[in-house]
Length: 493
Image (tube, rainbow, N blue to C red; front, side):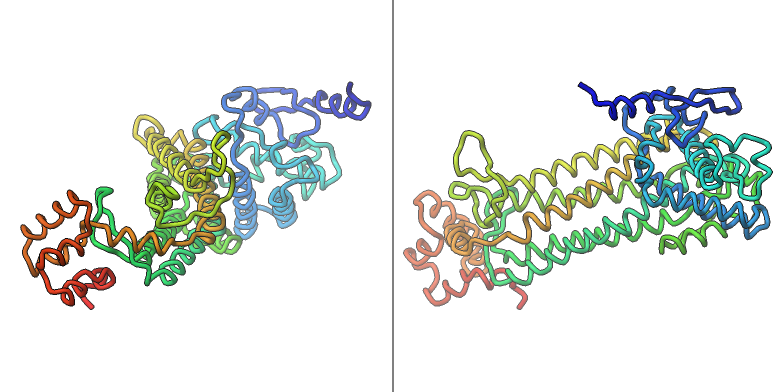
């Protein structure tokens, strides 16, 4: 049974106001800050139920504030109007918690017009209506000619969108959002993971274990050496993210409709980039060629590919660790994985490598996201003549990949690596029983004799050391020197 308060709230949600755009009147929910253009998009694209990511909305707010500053400096926008726009953008960047949150006012589906026009207009409308509220007038007044005579009155197209087009603002916002998320979240997470792997590599440098190639026994390796390889993968990941930031730093803003820069000042782009750099701490710059920057999305495809590579790296590390921790008694068992939750509803005491599995699944999703981004960049699919028309999907997938990779690094580090321990006894036991130990005998007794020794040791269930002593192939002292597993891991020392 609903309460009176719930009924009142429901009634408020059902109320509408009439807004106007170039196509005429449109009923809009009374309690939202968007207008007719946004409402048309809401009705046109009920596809996934997933709105454009909040990070994109924040990027748009950051961009609109920067464009207002640039237009003021160029004498295109008065100081009161610029300040009104900037204040509204700050409200959006604050999350709009006092107004029901971002989602309430930015509801448009990811799968919308391919240029992102709907989201650009959504931002323009919300900014102008926030200014209406700040000016003490009704939401929707931004189309009233009398209201617009006020010195702080803002029109969504003429003022908020001044010198811009959806065709250059949406791809610019994509770059801003991805760059900020990489700089502030993913890069620190990758660095922390790399640091932990480095620490483990140093801590376990004296733990000698058997190496494995083709999932078969190979020559000995130190656990620290294996983990130094994992750490190096994350250092390469850091380098890839810095390359991504450089790629994302080139912005199409200022190209307007098709890259020619019609209806904008020649210095507009450089000024906007400078203000964005100040706001984010990321080195943004004007596109060297606005036609490439708007007609193609090669930069986003490149960044997605770099993210995919990092996902592949994480999958390698996670999979190796779950293999080395398999068992604990009937598998490899060289690593002891921390128990974070019961592993089975039917087998008591079973603990599974759930963190590794989650990371590998995340990698699969990032690879899938990259496939979608690649398809979106294809000629004839998303890139059509003078504009790419798959940008909302491409941007959302790149941001999703960044989010997944960030979470994967954090969880992998905190829930698994920090509690991971080697089983030193198991490592020593497996080395001694390995047939690959005979590799170090090759320079002394030859390949054929060493091979025969390995096969015989396997057939008789003996160690290479025991059978070589039994057959008197090498003197005991020399044999111990040759079969010292630690020396096999550093043959050049």
